Length: 128
Image (cartoon, rainbow, N blue to C red; front, side):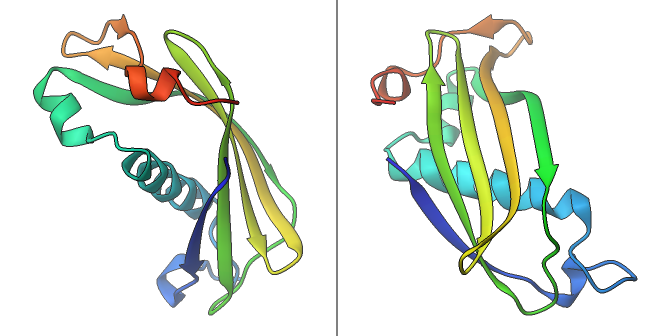
C-alpha cells in the first residue's frame, strides 16, 4: 500500500541557490509518515498518552535531482519491512515523472524512559 502526499514548494523551503534546502526533504517525508500513520488509524496522541512514541532510528537518503520554488511534489511512502519492534519504510519525493529524493527510514517505538518497545498491533498487521 503506497501512501501519497502532495506538497508545494514554498519560497521558505529554498536555499540561496533557489533549490529546496536538503534538510527540508526530511521534513517532507516526516509529514508523509505522520499522514500515513493517521490514515491507517493510529492516533499518535493516544500513543503518547499511553507512554509510547515513534522514533526515527536511521535514515539513508539519496538526493537525486533538485526541486525549486513552486514545484508540486508528491511524497510516496510504503513499508518494506515490519517486525515486532521496528519498521523500515521507503519514501520517495517525485515531481511529476521525475524522482528527486529517496530514503530508507527505520522507525521504532520507545517508551517514556526511552527504552524500545513493540510497534502498535495495527502497524504490525500491515502487509508488506
